[in-house]
Amino acid sequence: MRLVYRKKMLENRHFLIGIFQYFTTVAYSIKGQLHFICINGDGDHEIVQILPDRFKNHIEYFRKFPQSVRDRVKTVSIDLNSYYKDIAKQMFPNAEIIVDRFHIVSMMTRSFNQTRTHLMKQYDKDSKEYRILKFAWKLYLMHVDELDDKQLFYDRHLRQQVTALTRVSQGLDLDETLKSTYGAMQGIMISLKNHDKQGILYYLNDNSQLSPQMKDTLTTFKKNLEFILNAAETKYSNGPIEGINRMIKQIQRTAFGFRNYHHLITRIKLNQARTKKRVISRAV
Image (cartoon, rainbow, N blue to C red; front, top):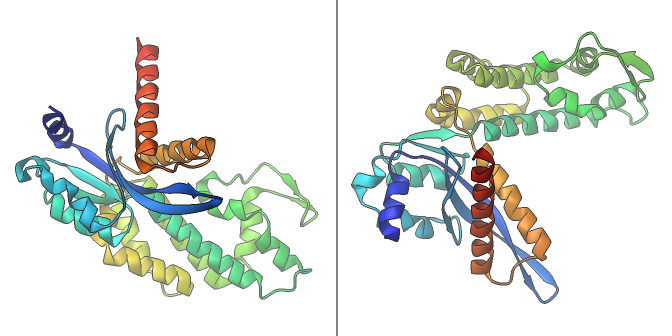
């Protein structure tokens, strides 16, 4: 019965694939290991399978299912880990592979932050330019259309009242490379939000004045162009799997780690079943 149930779980599914870290306590030391997790992208995001590690020899688990069943998987959402891309192609040949939007944005914001801090360190720590780049860094990572251009706030580091948009502009005006890097990051973020594939293509190819960090990131995107463009036209992302990873971290934190890996898996499944039951009872 379990095999039949599992087969049904693969049919016409949208899979979200990711990893989580399992902490084991041995005497007074804590060791971490990454594990593979796959969940259903639709409905209640039920966990399909958790495997002992993220390497190919264990992910071959999916070969247990007939090819006819695996052919019915519609989409697989992953990050840019090369293991997952290869596995998705081999195991689910008819599935559309999607790079998770969260990881696309995360890679770009990381590259921009590296560019910003590199420029910041060229200024004296007591200078105004240093303070402009160092503080209020979260504003740089917001969508530009969410930056308020009317409401003033007092910036204690600059000792003046500014709007959020003005505060960002002050930093970008310090360096053309920083401004161009910011423009590319915001352009792709907005294109993803608006499901604009042509916009993504434009910003991927218009990178003449970008920082080396952002150029490397965009080169990675170009190598995975098909999967990046898929992210622009689908509703699926790895947000639900990040939520499950947070739940797993909380379980491990509460238990101060697990000596037995299988006990952790049982606890995860019990917790999800209890959450599912609570949601159903509220709906009724």
